[in-house]
Image (tube, rainbow, N blue to C red; front, side, top):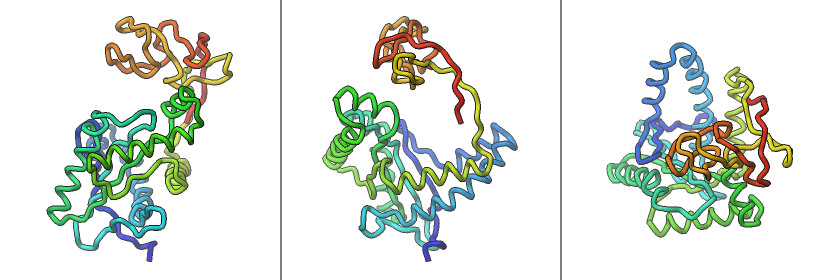
Length: 260
C-alpha cells in the first residue's frame, strides 16, 4: 500500500552550475558542527521518510505518477534550483541550474537508472510581491503569468522535466507545512530577536527587497537590502547607508522583531 511505498535512495540538486548530493551535505555538516547537528540530522531523516513517501506518489493533476522507486534498483530524485516568477527566464536560469540537472537526468536514463527530475517556479517571497506591485497585478496573476512563460521557455530549450510544478499548489503547501510542524514539534525551531528596518508609513517591517540605499562597501547609491548590483556583495538591510522604503520612499527605523 502507499504507506509502505519505496523511497528514493539518492537525492541530487543542481544550483549555480554544480550538483550536490545529500549524503555529502550530511557528512560535512556533522563534521563541522558536532553532536548538535547529529541530533537534528537524526530527526530530519525521520521526517524525510514521510516526505519520500509523498514524493513517491507524485502526480501531475490526475495523471499517473511520472516515476516510482523500484525495489532492488538505484532510485535517484533530481531537482534544480527553483526560478522566481519575477522575470522571463534568462541564460543564468538555464545554465546555472536547470541545464546541468537535465544533462544528469538524461545521462541516468540512458544508463537505465530509475530517476525523477523535478522542478517548478518559486512563487513565494518578496521578489513576487514587488514584481506584482510594479506591474499592477495581484500576486496570483503575476505567478500565473510567469509560470506560463517559464514553461514555454524550458519547453523551447527541450528541458526534459518529469514534473514541473509550482510552490503555490495545495499539495506543496501541505508537504511544507507538515515538514515545518514536524520540526517544530521535535524542538528544532527556535525563536530569537532580529534587528529589522520598520516603515512607520506602511506600518510593517521591511524585507530585504523593500529597502534601497547606498552600499556601505562601494558607495553605489541604488543598492538593494539583500545585494549591491554594482560590487556584487551580499548585504543586510540595516547595513545600507541612508536606507529608504522602496514602496513609499520614507526612511525606516531599526527595531527588534521576534523570528522563528
